[in-house]
Length: 147
Image 1 (tube, one colour):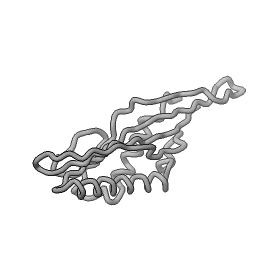
Image 2: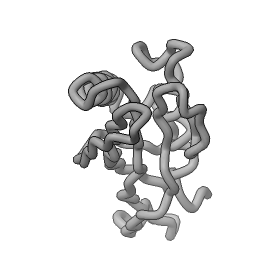
Image 3: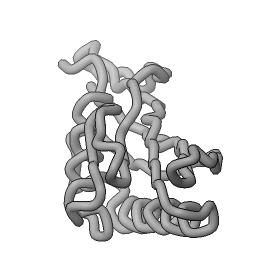
Image 4: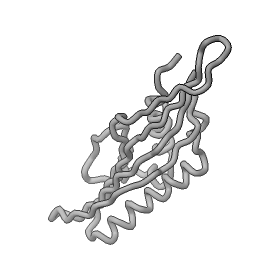
């Protein structure tokens, strides 16, 4: 019996991101964790740190089904000459990710994952002197189960 579906879900989410147009160009760095080439746009997943596990249904055998709610932080960083261009591009990436999750909320049938979706985000635009960054931090809310 597994104790969590978090790591498998994060790996499946990474695989979806790495295969998703417009993220498949050589101008976008898609990573499991923060580590990227600052000359390219970047999308990466944050640390796994939020999980709530509840026991649900007991079975005749004495085992029980557990449900797990968790969040995976998702970061998007775009650098462009102007804030408007950076922000539009970053939100274009976020929209593509939201659409992909809506079309495949189980992340290609990730074992014991009920669904995953973008539940919220924040964005910040910063002029670095060498370009303007737009960084979006989104939350991928997930529900899993295991027996």
